Length: 263
Image (tube, helix red, strand yellow):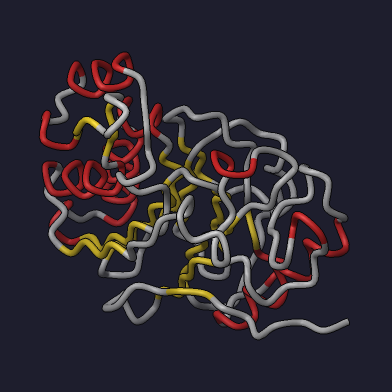
């Protein structure tokens, strides 16, 4: 089997004790509509393919594949503390964020248009991975994530590092007026919305994520850019291709040996 070189992205200036990365669809072993670096096995790809794709990605980042935590994402704002759990125990639990203070624990969120947002305390004491679709973003998932990391790391929002990964950009994120009204009702400003040639509004998810982080006191914010809808050769997109389709994986972890809970 011919496998293309693994391709992934990372944001600059992460705390030295923190490892992280954002996958692309390049460099894996999955066939067909999942070509090639699919990171989730619940959409029709084989578990063996996904396990190998994750292994290659996490190993390249210096993270242990056996330490990965993922959850069943439901477009909400609940965040799971995994400190007393073990990898594999969380895959059926319904959350949209993960937080930990444990070295060797890797937190992951899967996306195919929604935004992956990674947070780390600059003192290295806590990290979080957040799944921010429009519903979760409007409802406050980022604020919840900031609070979760700050409370565990005993720091202020200004002491956090944040990375907003690739998602659907404003050029392609066509929405209904009811979505605009939901954001406005939750305090997001009007300039993040504009009318398209069709007359329907478009929204700027990455811009709203950065605004939300800034409003809550985060200073060090990195946006990786890219549009999952436009860049079909690099990213999976549910809006573009529907299901079955692959999913991207964004991960973060505190470097160090993993010592699992005995719970």
